[in-house]
Image (cartoon, rainbow, N blue to C red; front, side, top):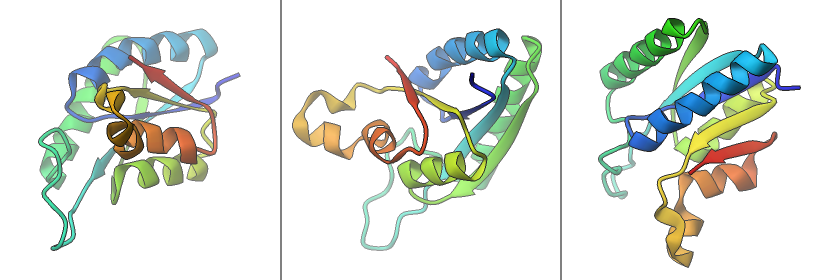
Length: 137
């Protein structure tokens, strides 16, 4: 059912919590797991990204290495991808590229207001994704 799962990772608590769900799905369906971390580089007129966004290539490489190690401890080999761009658009582009069957994401709860909902990465991914999106609260 879910041959390829895309799991976008960052340094948030919600990502760590969603990892348990990813493990269960990958083990149940024998899925391939692709980890993705996005380097968000603001343009000069934009504000700096949120503190939880990945701001350097070194931080992304370390995060992906750590994530791969954690999944390996549970018997899951994960492929890691690093990309640069706007997180929501990049996640959806990669999902399309790899023909993902499912995207699993944590939700930061920033969408509690109308403004927050329209601006959240999770909401944008839900609206743009070429495949189903599982949001782990």
